[in-house]
Length: 108
Image (tube, rainbow, N blue to C red; front, side, top):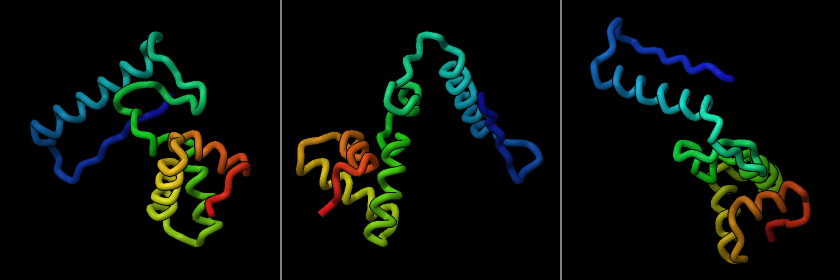
C-alpha cells in the first residue's frame, strides 16, 4: 500500500480542487482494493486507465536509463529513440525496452 498526500498553499481548498482530490483518492482506493483488478505480469502495475500509459511501465524507465547512459542524452531523447526503433521494427515499446534491458538489443 502507499500513501497519497496533497498539500496546498491556501488554508481552505477551492471546491474544484477538493472535488478533484476526492475523485483521485476514490479511483486510487478502488483500484488498490478491488480484487478484480488484474495486475500485468510484466511490470506488476494494475491494468487500469490511470496506469495505461506505456511511459509508466518500469521496464521502459529502465531502458530509458540504459539509452541515456549509452547515448549521453536526455530522458526525452532516449524515450523518443526507443519509440522510433520500436515503430521501425513493428514491436511494442515494452517489448523493445525488455530487449534493451536484457542487453539483447542495442540502438544503432
